[in-house]
Image (cartoon, rainbow, N blue to C red; front, top):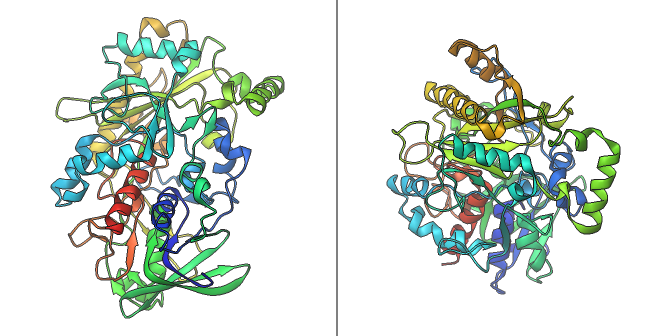
Amino acid sequence: MNNQADYIIIGAGSAGCVLANRLSSHSKNTVSVFEAGPSNNTWKVDMPSALLYVMHDEKYNWKYYSEPEPYLNNRRLYCPRGKMIGGCSSHNGMVFARGHKEDFNRWASYGLDKWSYDKVLPFFKKSETWSGKNSFRGTDGPLKINKSIIDKKFPLFDAVSKASREAGFKSFNDSNSNDNEGFGTFDVSIDGGVRQSVAKAYLDPIKKRKNLKIIKNTYVKKILFKNKTAIGIEIIRNNKNEKYFCNKEIILCAGSINSPKILQLSGIGDGDHLKDLGIEIIHNLSGVGKNLQDHLEIYIQYKSKQKETLYNLSTNLISQVAEGAKWFLFKKGKLSHSHLEFGGFVKSNNKYIHPNLQFHFFPSLVINHGLENPKFDAFQFHACPNRPKSRGYVKISSKDFIEHPEIKFNYLKHEDDLDQMRESVKIIQNICSQKSLSEYVDYELRPGKNISTQEELDEIIRNTAESAYHPSCSNKMGFDKDAVVDQDTKVHGIQNLRVIDASIMPDIVSANLNANVVMMAERAADLLLK
């Protein structure tokens, strides 16, 4: 295994960790995994409440930004992407949410019959060990997933739960059941007060396998081809260029920003664009980097009458030391939670077959992606359309692999997305007007008690909405002119090359993405090994 392996995996994020585990479980397969970032072995990853530390550290994060977004008053939005073992599962909010079953039946309706709900459910179950019990959930998978009980610990969460019922919404028992409409506590990838990254679940137990090689702090410059067959990769490590070769296949798992970037740098993409950059065209595949989607959130914020938010923890040194001691000694206390553990799935009107809006409650204000502390006790709801119609792109602007690609989501380009965001604000305003929250709600901060017209609300949305950090679909699976991979995850027109990560979703699912990426990697590993 000096400079060759049967399988080369580019990226040790969620999909890469799953594939490294499953492919190397066959002792005859040699597997090499290449990761641009370092190990995730730090308390900053393990502590659930410390997620912002690595999300803003360029050692662990690519720290991308979008281009000026034309429908958000030309604001550039932050797009953090994990750059370490475990990828985004090492810095995400730890909400473990499957997409709705109709998401996958919709994929099947595009001709992707191997990705129908019936076909993917076994792989959701295979991935998890869930704290509850029903026939839709897994009992012996690598990921330890628990239903949050945060509403039993903190009165503010309990009050929000009661207010949602008073507003006429159902409560779900399992946020990942087929009937998850309503509000309740989410499943979380937290176990015993510690983050359960995909690396911890899938990679740590098997990283000493003799047929597995994990190579960190290594940039993949491009994929190498002979004719239209992938044969290896060119990397840079310790400031030296090297080449590694594969005996079977190369699997690109670099995520929805870096996977299209690497394909384009390797000569696979829109031929005219690559030619303009002086890149040799291996295969003219115009869909690479197109169809980019994300969830866009509006934060609906309230000043609190009570001191039960995270304000004191974020500003008071004594509280920080006390809670820090609880976590470091016992893995308990407030720092053992992500605090994004309560929310809901709601239909804004009856034209939707299943919920089109998703909500997360958070017991503080998020200012500048958490870089600034609030000045008083407050809380907020994150609200977003979870199947947006707007589409963007990822496009390299140079053949230099160090240069960040051009990223534009075109958020709210489709009027329907903006209309759904307006509806999401009304739903939260209704909940926050209920009796159970009357002792908590002081007044509305955003959109604000003085906002009275649709035009004013639209400006608040355009000026303040932020990414939910769910980029996806930029190398979509399918058969049309913009499709990049087939339903076996093989790149169209190329031999021995697959893409397996969130970029191959044909369209975005109605939930946070991590559980779905793990499922997709499990499903793809099964297809590949067969």
